[in-house]
Image 1 (cartoon, helix red, strand yellow):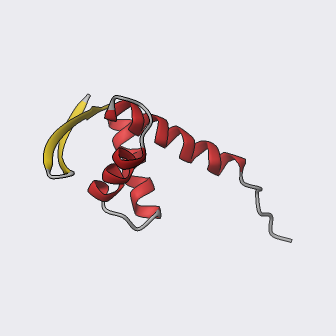
Image 2 (cartoon, helix red, strand yellow; image 1 turned 60 degrees about the vertical axis):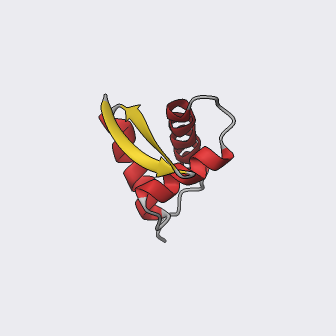
Length: 76
């Protein structure tokens, strides 16, 4: 587990995630042209899970599922 600290809604919070989830979160932030803190803030503001770490994992899962469901483009 790796812990990182962020300032969200005016208060500091620490989030512990496995390294693979941090990498996925960084990839999502990059693709969406957001800072890591901006993406975490967005997840925090829209989460339904009580725990922020869980909400982040579920958000990552949803993002990858949506990408997996996209049609595959083939070159003709």
